[in-house]
Image (cartoon, rainbow, N blue to C red):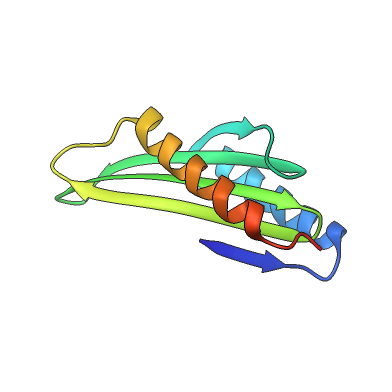
Amino acid sequence: IRAELYPTEKSAAQYYKISHDMDKKTYFDEDLTGLGDEAYGTNRDWDLGVKTSDYTVRIRSGNLFFTTKVVTYGTAFIPKADIKARVLAQAKVVFAALPKK
């Protein structure tokens, strides 16, 4: 979990756009609704000698840029729907508790 406060909403929006554009070219899953001003998720399965699945949610709300990421390691990949549900649940709880300005 990572929360970054930028000096202005504009600077947070610029950083969000850069992140969104970079992720859109690689592991982008989808834009997410109902979280902040804008949000999206990324998903990746990879094998490093162990099956690794990760899902990341990135949210911008005003001048706050918030990231939640879950990474699993095991003998099998985690289905995207399962890991996504876990990360979204965590992101919603923590995001709701953060001051937004």
